[in-house]
Each structure stands twice: as C-alpha cells, then as structure tokens.
Image 1 (cartoon, rainbow, N blue to C red):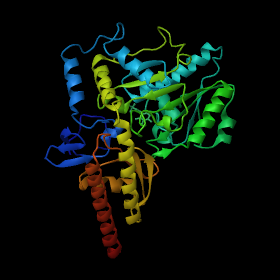
Image 2 (image 1 turned 135 degrees about the vertical axis):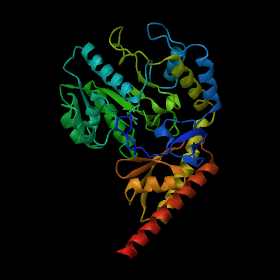
Image 3 (image 1 turned 180 degrees about the horizontal axis):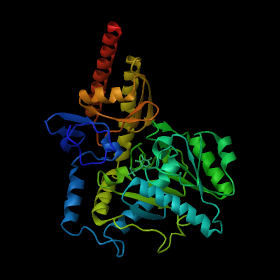
Image 4 (image 1 turned 120 degrees about the horizontal axis):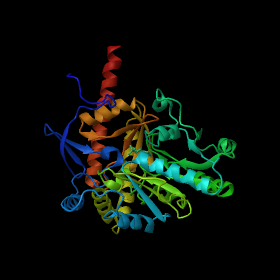
Length: 400
Ligand SMILES: *Cc1c(COP(=O)(O)O)cnc(C)c1O
C-alpha cells in the first residue's frame, strides 16, 4: 500500500462510496450497501434527502458565512424551534458533538461560579461513557484507551459505575458542579440507563444544587422514537448536548440549556468561529421540518419495535453468533458471541453496514426513514452474515 497523506488515526474499511440514495450507499465499484450505521447515527434522514439537498443548495447560493459577530441567518429560528420542543430556553450552536459537550461542561462550571461557587467545577460521569475526543471530553469519558499518551487527564472529572447510586453519593462533594450522562450509552454498547436511575439523578441534582447534563449527541433527534431519548423517562436535564442527527450529515452540534443554567454565558465567555453557520442552520431547520412533521416519530417507534422483534428472532436462531438484542427505536444493538468486528465485516460482505461498539455489541442505527421492506432486507442480510460465520466456525472446527 502506498503511504497515505493522512494521519493514521482511523482503521478504515477500504470501501469507498460514490453516492447515497435513502438508506443505500453505492460504492465506487457499483456495489450497493444497506446503511444501518448512518455514518454513526448522523444521516437521520438517509442520503440525498431531497428536502435537505434543496435547503443546502438554496442557502449555498445566498450566503455561506458571516461569523458570530453578526446575527446568523437561521440561528434564531433553529434555536427557537429547539427550545419550543424541549426543556431548554437557550441554545448555543457548535460544529460537532465534542464541542457541544465542552459548551455543556463550561456552562455548568460557569453557573456554579456565578452562584458564588468557583470551587464547584467537577463533573461526575459514568463508566463506559463517551463524550468526545477533546482534552476535556476524553477526561469526561474516562476511558484509558483514549487518555493514554495525551498528558495528564484534565482535572475535574469523577467517574462512577453506571447504576451505582452509592458510589455516586460517595463521589459528590463540595467540588461537584454537575452530573453528565448519556440516556443510552452509544459507543459503550447501546446500554440503556433505567428511567428510575435518571429520576434519582434528577433528585440528587436538585437536592445538592448540581446541574444535570444529558449527552444526547447520539440518542437525540428522533433516534429512539422520541425527539430526545430522555423523554422516555420524563426526566429533564438542565443542559443537553446534541449533534449527529440534527445536521443530517452536515456538521452541526448544539448545547441546549435552561435560562437559569445558561445565565452566566454572557458576551465574551464562550464562542466559535464556525458554529451555527448559515449552511448548518439551513440544513438543521430542514431536518426539523421532516422530523417534527406529524407521525414521523410514531413511525420511528413502530419501525423500531418491528426491527427489534425481527432481530430477537435472529438472536434465537443464531446462538453461536448472537446473544442478545437491546435498544430503543432505531438505536438498536446486537450483543455478539463472536468478536463484534467479525460480524461487522461479514455483514459488510453481505451488503450491510453496521457500527461496532463497546461491550462486544454491533450498533444497528439505520436512517429513520428506513421502510419496513428495507428492515426485512436488513434482517435477511444479517441472517446471511450469521450463517456465513457459522459455516466458518464449522469449517474451522473440522480443520482442528
Ligand atoms: C459522537 C458522540 C460524541 C462526540 O461527537 P463528535 O461530533 O465526534 O465530536 C459525544 N458524545 C456522544 C454520546 C457521541 O455519540
């Protein structure tokens, strides 16, 4: 292989795609792949969605960038729309998920500072969490493999096992500012947090004067069949980070907060050159047009249920390959018996793309626009992949 001009940070598949149509990706050699990864939960409306293409083209012909020195076309509207349908009163736009989490962490620290508690800057997070790859967010995620070799872990992050209330109470102290959690861990392996645990977190935050931060970068924007996954629990955060699906493939993220939690974020405290630029806002607004339309989310719920049921059948039929199905809506996970990388690459050979996660789980996160027929096709392809893996095991067993 000739030396690449790129950093060696990614172990890429080698599959090059030429274009996409709905839930399908077409490789340069013409092969068609059913996309059950959505570019890691990003292409919420699939590829080349006409409404998004139109919105981007129209904006591209008008104005690309003015910076946040001026009001930016579309920001006020997208911010208002997000606030209207959530717990939040205010929104700060970013370019990525990690930046949205950074904004969330800074907002929480600044709130405590304004309350006269500059010593309260610690954020409690949970084992298996993923909050991004910046220096602060790798400290928040707490995973050794992402921290190694990058200097001292940024101070102010304390981690406890998910679901462990006692450990949580132990770690909360006079330095604690906030608790941050993904309602369903994505990278961690589609691990769902029980609603009761979120309720406990809300109570602890209220009792102790802490802010509750939800990282809905992966779970948000309709992925689970609700606009945001925390709606399943009825528990509202004070601050929430979103990204991925809100841009439908255009890089955009946002930090949402209540008026109280965001009151300290006054002029000069935070900023971004690109965040919330006109192109991103045009696409974000177009994504909401579709996702907030009547019955869209109900359809995601019912498609998610039927997909999960079919995957449960697949698990039953292939106990040597799969052991469990988990998740909500179209954020599904298959717990593997075989190494997850083997299932992902075999599925690819059968024309289906999925995303590996922690806990030996493969994530099934198709565009929310997937049809029932395409769900059946996805299950058939996964079935074929499971059969191929079983055949391989039988052959390898015979060879021993
Ligand atoms: C993807 C993700 C992030 C990081 O988003 P980037 O856009 O890659 O910076 C943070 N938190 C969660 C839960 C994610 O899924």
